[in-house]
Structure formats: structure tokens, C-alpha cells
Image (tube, rainbow, N blue to C red; front, side, top):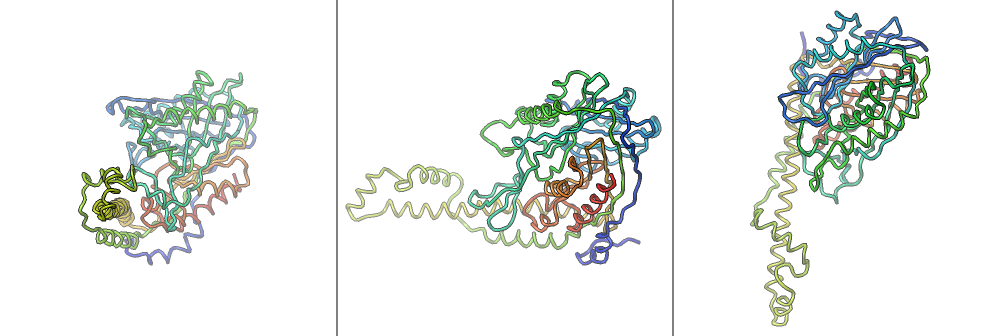
Length: 510
């Protein structure tokens, strides 16, 4: 019998067990300093019924083998592996079963990362993925391997804004921006581009794996279906290295990282511009990499148990805030039609907004102040209207996040248990070390793991082998209802300690 989630205290009984980080190991494969063979392929997975296309979405596969063990690193230009978007929840199981049946590839040795772009992909994406892996498998050839790093600071920004009142707000289209005067600071980005270069024996690149943290949600001016900035970046890399090179993008800890100037309204936002920057920087760094004949190769797949949140208290707090905001709205004499001209006049002439200065001076000589009194009243009316606008903007944020919290509370209750099992993948190719999660990890998670890692080329990717919504830090989860990551989350704050402990153990053995 399972127990439904009813109140926050139900988690206390399992808290200490979860913090112990209990896991079930699935599979570890390794080859120490082995000569590797690899094959790469890509398949267009555009939804042809979704209209015009600019930078089509692809599924890409890199098959690596040491002669004993074969593993697949796959990427797809889609929002997620299941749960949201076009890819169904049975996708991963169907692909793995087919690859086991047709190629003998152990299901645990298949990993796939979603770029998190919002491209519309075809309904037979599972069949296209199998087709892609089979094509890569058929192209296996000896390769040399090299690892490097690039740095790109021009295409991304942290979308969490720390306010002077201690809260944090998000830069996203579902929310109004806070007032400039209320913003104290912004969060960090991760400029690192982790790069693996695999060359054929003749020195021609077979594949470039590159990992970077940023939501690819800039779009193109036409509104066309697009693989977004990472699609354009991959095309730059492939064009630069020539036909036969496949660029595979791995999304990093981009949960709270936006493309730069994401909310611009004075010019068309264009992912191609940012994608070209990312692609060129990656290409230049990749060209400097020297490859060698032997490289360590390991893939570890484990199951990690994480605690689900009980969101009842958070929902109640947000509903109370919603009611407080509603009650604070007041009547005003103005509407939009009368408010806008008053604001314009006040900004054009602060001292004499309603008419020319000589009229004010004329009245002053006669001992009257009718125009000044009119201006005083109009300023008060405008201030009252602006106050209501600010309350309305806060209400939109609260109401949006209440809906997210309610959705995830229903999901957690329907699950019938207070935990969720997720896949953790550890990958090593030469000096390149990667750990993954199905969550939308925020950037501080990745930065912390990289800083603590014993390996200089350590990278952390979310959006891999499933999807469990946002995975912010425990501290960020205390920012109730003010940013999307804090509300669009099924995890309890304790998840971070459990995850980081397991990752630390994994990094020691990989």
C-alpha cells in the first residue's frame, strides 16, 4: 500500500534515508586507454506539418566501441525526452528495446540528451532515432580522440534577478520584469564549452561533441520551426570542418540561463546570430585540439532515488499572497487612454507638463495656481494607476506559479510514493568527464560540481535520459513563487544533497 502526499511532515520519516543517497547500480562499462572505433550519423526529424523551417531539428548519434562494449551518445533538437513536448514518455524504452534487438546494444549504454530547443519534431521520432544509430553503427572506423575547452560569454545571461528585498525574479515571457530600481544583482553564467574531438585516422574530424549551458529559446524573426541557436552553432561547426563531420550538442546546466537580451522588443530576436557566435568559438577551440590514438572510455548508468516535494504549504502561501495582492488594488480615476498622455507630458516637461511655461507664470503673477493644482492631482492619479499596474504584474507571476505548483502537487500525489527514481549517467572519453541528470539543473549546480571535481575537464548535463522538470538548488527552492524554477519543480529541497553526494562518488570512480 502506498501513502499519498498530504502535508510537508510526511517527508521527515524518509528524509534521512534519502540523504544517505541510496542508489541501484545498473551498469558500468569501461576500457582503459583503448584504441577506439566510432561512427556518427544524423537524421532530420522535422515535423513537416509544423510550417516553415529555419535550421531543421536533427537526431544525431555517435556510436563508440572498444571491441568489447558498444555505447551510444545521442542528441536531439527537442525540448525534452518525454513528459513535455513532442517526444512521448515511452520513447526511451522503445528505442532501447529496438537497439538491443537489432544491434545488441545494452539499454544502459544508450544515452540521449535533449538540447531543450522548442522545435516541433516528427511523430515517428523513435524510429528515426533507431535509424540514426544504425547508420552510425554501420560507419564504425578507428578514431583518435582529443579533449579541449572553449569559453563564450556573449550569448547567455542568468535569468534570475536578485531583488533588493532579498527575493529573486525570473526573466521570462510569462512574467513582467521587475522595476529597474528593485534589481540588486544577477546570477552567474557558465561560459565553458566542453569539447571532444574524434578524428579519423587520416586526421579528418568524424565528430565534435560540444557541451554548453543555455536555453536555446531565442527563435527566429519569421517564427519558423527551428533548432534555435544550438542548431545554427552545429551547422557552423559542421560547415567549418567539412562534409563528414557531425557536431553533437549536449545541453549543460541551463535551467536558469537564457539567451542574451531574451526580452528584447525593439528589434527582431534571431537565434542565428547567437548560434554563429557559439559555433565559431567552439570551432576555433576544437581546431586547437590534438588527438591521440588511445583514450580511456567508460560509461556508467545508475538509478538514483530523489525525494518528491509536498507542495501543499507552498500553494497555501501563494494563494494567501494572491489574496493580499487582490485586496491591495484600489480604484483610480484614470484608464489606459488617459494615463499614457499624462505620463508622456510629465516626462517631456516635469515643471510644466500641462501647458506652456508662460501660462504658469501668468497665473503666478495673478496669485493663482490652477495649472499647478491640476498637475499635482494628475501626478497623484498617475501614481495610483502605476501602483495598480505593479500589483497586477506581481499577480501574473503569483498566479502563473500557483498553476505550476498545483500541477506538480497533483503529479506527486498521483505517483503514490514520496520518491522518484531517475537515471544518472557517467561518461568518460579521454580527459572529458560528463555526469548527467534528467532534470533542468540550474547553473549553480553545475558550477559547484565542476569546482569540486578531481577532473579538470568535468561537465554536467541535464535533460538526459528522461525529464523531471526543473532542479534548482535547495536555496533557490526557498524563493517561493517568485521564479519559474522554484515552482516548476517536483523535487524536495533535499534532492540537491542526495544528487551531489552521488555525483561526487561517481566522479571518484570514473
